[in-house]
Length: 142
Image (cartoon, rainbow, N blue to C red; front, side):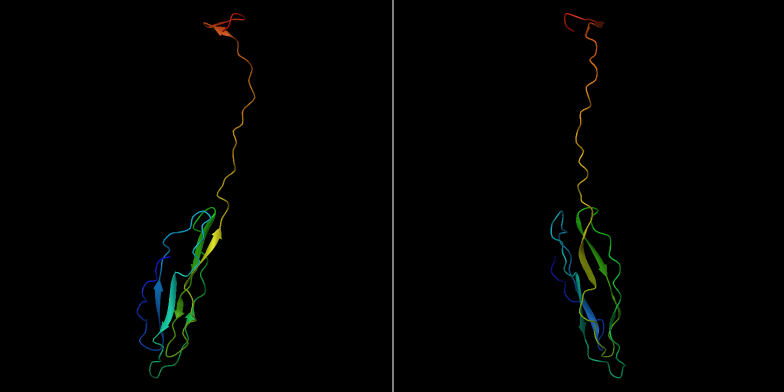
């Protein structure tokens, strides 16, 4: 994984906002290599002091989206799913519980090896007639 980026600016100046930082996968696992299973994005609460005279509203996460397709068609790969904040904390409401907006997990597809095909000889055919200079012969070589 790459290093974390710097934190983004806070989304609000008061009553609780959020900020995020990201990192990327530098090298995806191949074959039977170990998959990255750590977060690629982190969110953090910031500027939580309430704005003057406002009603507190708590932060709310969306439901997790469906898992993406596996990154491979055979063997071990990765898939991910995401969620987002549908309502940020406002006016001193509770910040969203710490967590990631992206989850990654391993996924295993069918084996990459296909059915082995082995060469097989056919049975011998009949002997052909012995020939010499285009004529069939029964003695003296051909």
